[in-house]
Image 1 (cartoon, one colour):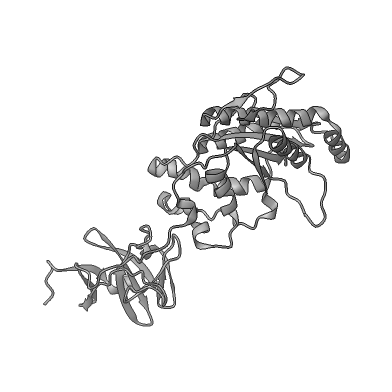
Image 2 (image 1 turned 60 degrees about the vertical axis):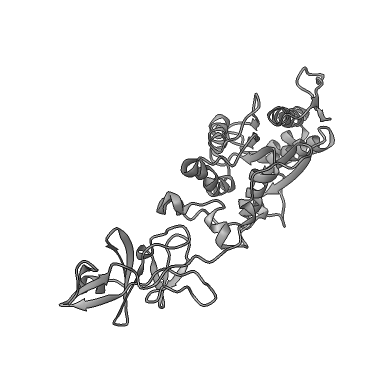
Length: 363
């Protein structure tokens, strides 16, 4: 006879036969009830990784696949796939009078095996040295058959100035040279499923978004993002990157952990269409939510307006404009100056002939 103090009736077995995997509760504990090839299995419904709901996952053969990050466990024993030592508790069950009864105390214990920490999870500590400037080009291009990119040209001017005149370390990241997956909506499954580092980065070592995370969170002090205007908005590559940066902002929401500290962002925006202010507004809002600071006058921009369809002339104008080049130099100078102040680094500041703040060197 089944003792109801030790066992719990989960209900009619026919309900569990309707689908291969069902989430249920034994007391307050989640369990994953599976039915396949005429056999039931009951294991803990909580993944030992970061608590994903196994009962909401799927079956791959005899293994339950966690819907959050695809960790797998045998549907009957709770053991991980061969080669993996992570396990979830197995529950004893009986079928009586057409009902599924599960013992309240699990038959086995779960185990989360030691896993090496991802390099991106290391403590936030700025290495000594000059200001480090990261340039991010969000233009989309076939590098085998290149074309002039006005935003990237001005970004290179800014980086060259930062290196030669401001004595900064610089790094250029072209997003279209990186192979990285689109955001796959882990935050939409659960806020806790959107992790730092990004869940995709942890699961896919070939995903090159890691280079952006490393540059923004650990390496750089200043970020200069350059984007063309595409139908009144920043480029599609920018938004692809921005969606993947949700894992940075989500750490503030979940754990009050600010990953972006004393870092400065500024922007270069060019295009054959107008809407510069809307593009700049989105960039400023997004980077402020990540934790970046902005210098006075945080962007430069160029557009010949909606009717300027002769794009080759637009390119010529930017390439020949010393005013825009000087603007790029002044932009990165302002950003480096603010970063120097935030970091408490000493500097020498002069004046340009135009009366603006000049290139400065750290001493």
